[in-house]
Length: 246
Image (cartoon, rainbow, N blue to C red; front, side, top):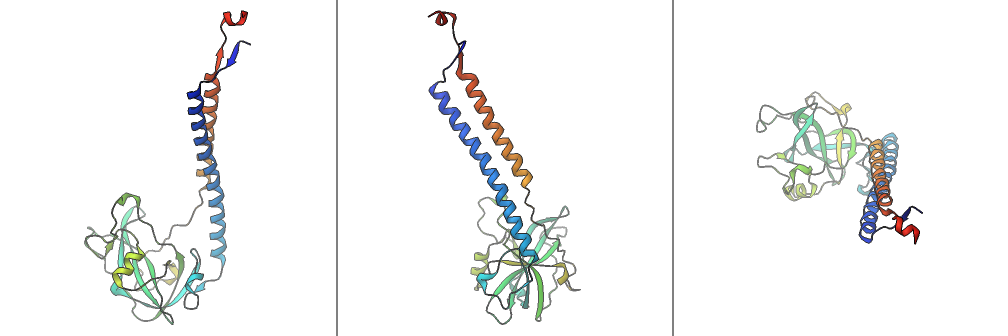
């Protein structure tokens, strides 16, 4: 035969590692597609369910992405603003206000909506609030996580309270001296009143984005194929004429 398969040890190990890594990344992206599709199905099912009444529902039974109604009153003294929230290209804040749930000892943080920033961050907007008992409608959600850009900043409260860099329920509980439910309530636009009509409630919807993961999976599988082709391409050696006569 004019060619002989003679891979070197180091080449074999190197290509095997690369092939394994690329193949594993491709499989991981395929699994992510399945996870996102399942998550989308769960969210779609929960959105169609009747609204949960928080005044009557035990804490362990509440689930994110479900509609909810709750009666009680706001605790305005502990209200804070989530900083650097961009909406329609404009900087602003989310207004987060604790809400005492009537007929229970529970308190839930309510995201009342977005309000635009004025000329400077320190010129804070004035938020009007109904202080009497009322009924709210919205969707339960997990708190907004710490942005990656904040890096090693561990204190969610900025140097200019009541501005907060990110949500941290544990820090909030230590600050105010009482516990809050693990989920927050994002108010629906239907809850809008004349007093808080200045707040915009255009919540981003969950998108599975499976196409992105499929693209990444194909990319990693192609890389694995290239490694395999390069390995075989460099491992086949052409026989010398002298060796053919032997």
